[in-house]
Image (cartoon, rainbow, N blue to C red; front, side, top):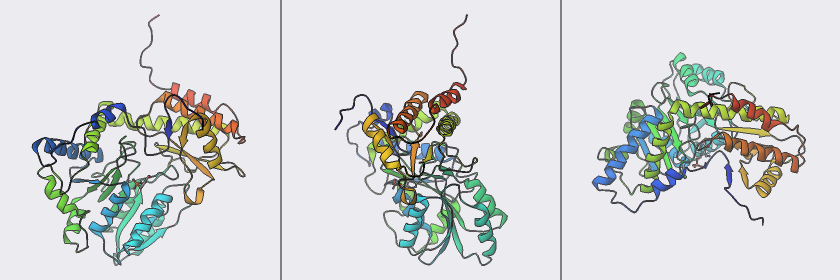
Length: 396
Ligand code: PLP
C-alpha cells in the first residue's frame, strides 16, 4: 500500500469534507440533555434549521441517516395501500421507492432514463387523470445524487396546483439543502427530507423532516403504527428545547457551527459558489471530450457532476487509479450505471483551489488509466474560475 501525504481528497457527493471549525465545535464533553444548557442548543438548532429550509413550520431533527428521515416522511402520513406518485430519477428515487414498497404503498413510478430530472409533464398528466384523488402523495428527489440531475420542486408544485390535486408534496433534498436554493414554505412543499452529511458539512447521523401544517394535520389524523419516527412526540418535546430520547448532542453542536458558517458566507453566496464550481467542472468535462451523466442543460446539479466513461472503459477501475495514485475518492456509479459513470462531488466545504486539485486528479487519472480524452480540461475550468469578482487588485 502506498503511503500518502497531505490531506485525502474526499470528492464523493457525501459524506463531504467537514470544516475544522465544525470538528472543533463538536469536540465537547457530555451534557445533560434535559438541562437548561442543552435546551439553549436545542432551540438554536431548531431555529437554524427553519432558516435553512426557509420555513416557519417545525423541523424535526432525528438522530438518523437520511434513510430514517425518508421512512419518517412515509410513516407519519401514509398507510398501506395508499397510492403515491414517484419519479425514477436515479438510484435514490429507486431506494425511496423500495421503502414505500416495504410499507405496502401502491407506487406509480414515472419512468426515467437517469439522465434528467423528473418528467413533470408525465406527473401532471397522471394527477389530472386521478379524478378521484386516489394519489395521496407526490414524492420526488430534488438533487438526484446518483446522477447529478435536479428536479425543481416548484415545477412539481405548479403541476399539482394546475390540476388542483390535494396530494402531499414530499421532496428529498438530502443532497440539495445547503448547496442550492430551497424554499420549503414558498414552494408549497409538505414534507422535506434532508440529512447532515452533504451541504451541511457534518458527519452523517442527523436526518431532518420539515413539515407543513397540512402534513402535520394528516399525521395527527393518521392511525399508522409508529413510535421513534412520530413527529408529534418530537414536536411536543421540542417546545421545551428537548427531545423524547437522547439526542445526538455533539452533532447538534456541529450543526449550530456549520449553519453559522453558511450564514456568515451568506446562503446566496453559498449557492452561487456551488453553481460556479459545477460550471467549471462541466467546462473541464467538455474539453476532455467526455459526457456528463445529466443530459438536460437546465438540470445540472450545482453539488456534483456525474461523468460517463467511454465505452469499453470501467469507471471503477479509473476511480481506483485515481485513489491509488492521488489519494482522491470519487463517487462510484450506482446500480444500473455502475462502471459506466463516476461522480465528482463539489459540495459543501469547498473552494476554487480544492476544485483545481480535484480536476487535476481526474485529468491525470484519465491519462494514467489510458481513458481516451483530450487534455486541457483543467485549463478550461481555470478560465471559468478566473471569471470571479476580483477580491483585491494592487494599485499601480
Ligand atoms: N437521498 C439522497 C438524494 C441521497 O443522496 C442519499 C445518500 O446519499 C440518501 C437519500 C440516503 O441517505 P443516507 O445514506 O444518509 O441514509
